[in-house]
Length: 365
Image 1 (tube, rainbow, N blue to C red):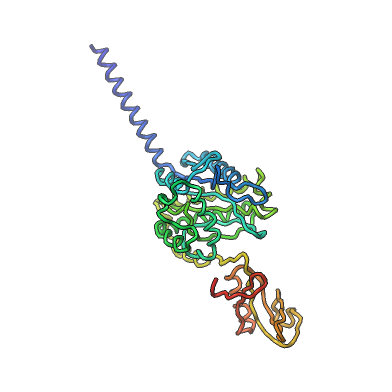
Image 2 (image 1 turned 45 degrees about the vertical axis):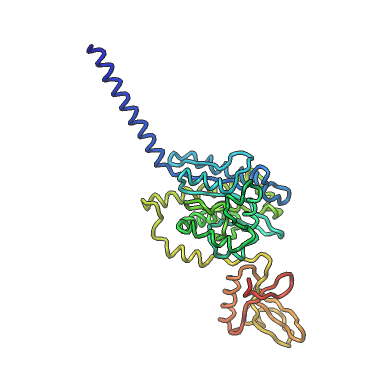
């Protein structure tokens, strides 16, 4: 009887210890920082085919490498929306992140343009700059037409409607500040660690991050349509560098979050406001210049003729010669050049824009 009692006591103790171990294991799992990595496109949706490269393959390679590196950290749990060449609907990508109660959602893509545009971009959700980025937004969102029953899943959302893009940003507005922090870290790493050209942090209304209820970013690691950049991104070395930059940014974001001991990164409101205000107004197909003078005199566009200003050009229009300072696709930079010109004494200078060699009304951009 005593022997039997001892067995029962030992059994109960072991059961209790096992339950504690299971609970501790569960607790540790719940305390993990959950990152959902989303490789853009896949399956019959190949993404862009710049220079013959497949976006879906490059995005997947980079994503898997980011995940493999993050998985080495016991405090991080990585979930993938896809790990193979399969098609995953946009709404399902968000569902995967939401069901996992993820802390971050990172979607990885490659860019395309009809020109030799180059550089990385990281997008957060927002309607600011929607009109300028609309062709990019439309291209990324039109993936829904490859899905069955897309009308049901997206409640009448129309990728060709700017109004649809603007309206959908409200749902995730609460996470935008933290998304910006991560996006900024990613772009900084692209510049400083991967030594790549960065086109900066931008806002756009993208369906893939529309319904994710956590900080979310969409990363464009470069343009496959650019001859040199496309070739770089199609190499193992190039993909590894981009992956490391993204991985390091995620780890830095987590560390910053941990140091604040809370669900939100605090003390950054003024920085976020400044970041939002300084998102570059880049128009790939428009050239901005500052018109500083118009005269019947034909002057050499040299600094000694224009109070020390350089990067000058001129154009003959009728009987007049128009003189310009600077040349850029960044409207904000053009306005800064205008301020410089005014400080030099050209108080009536103004910004003009040219598209396909013709002057345009920049107020309509």
